[in-house]
Length: 188
Image 1: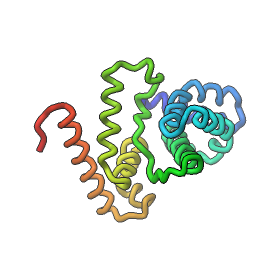
Image 2 (image 1 turned 90 degrees about the horizontal axis):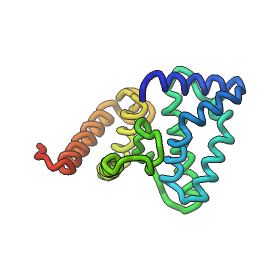
Image 3 (image 1 turned 90 degrees about the vertical axis):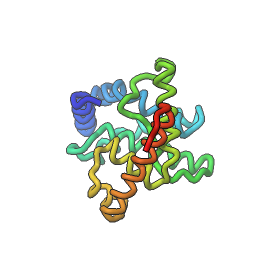
């Protein structure tokens, strides 16, 4: 996602903190499809719709908790992920332990408007991510979507820097192997 759009999202969140309704509308236009995608990824139709409504109903509280020096887009997506996981556990009793891979930066439209190649690629990326253990998947999530450093991830997950670095390297090697197999290339 380009820096200008990230800046606009951060500005919207700042406006929401000031209770500006136009900022809510603008933010909705910018990220509603992604928020919906995340909800539907974890929940069934009616439950996903309820979760989406709950997310937007709590947008003022979410904005109040946001620190403006960080990535607002990542914050809102991560929050929706956590809400969806918690709702899924509550409704279905599933033991979902991690934030699953979602290509937030490329989601602009529903899958109905995507080409077959894009959908196929996204599905293969998700399959590759499923090959990772929970810690590796979470580390890659934090690395890719939140641009966190090894030090920041180690602090957040309460692991040593060497553990995070090792897990990150193992995850990258597994993903490379999966992508090479998907693309039909030889891999090392």
